[in-house]
Length: 242
Image (cartoon, rainbow, N blue to C red):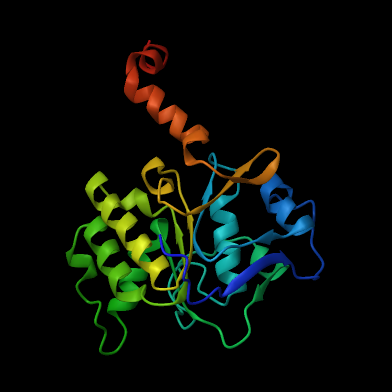
């Protein structure tokens, strides 16, 4: 992967200095608490947040999006749609240390709110996105990715693989590679061992001890579990289906 990145929109995530209720559920998640206490340095190119359900991946990505001024249900800074407010106030508790200059082009895609985003986009005047509901979930996701993510910008995704087949996930992997070469900074929360194998990616693991950098994707628990399952499914299934 090219290291000639054209931009590095967000260099660090840290506490904003606003009062924080440390008894709130989101503030007690170890990875979130670590960011609030110590901050998190971000690299240019693609960063993956990985961890078990409940580790704080989606909450952190959502908070970063909100702190950057993006709609927490997905979209750009100008997106106004909202269905049911469920996001934590983490975005208000974070500040993003940005590179000099204006905010980069930015977009947020999250798999769980794609239907609402499609509906919002198709209702905009002269919208180019009126076809999204006519496509499959995965096809619509990839079409929106192609239209909204491009060039040197700041982009976030929450579990994008949930909408995609294996082949489509490979297409996403190629798109992430292209975005990094174009100078984009991308943050992705994921459970996909396929995605984290992207060469040159920055991997941050979220767990009960907080968060830490992972130098080799092969050492991740999610990779080990998938390998073990595919090698011998019966070892798992005989306990689940007994």
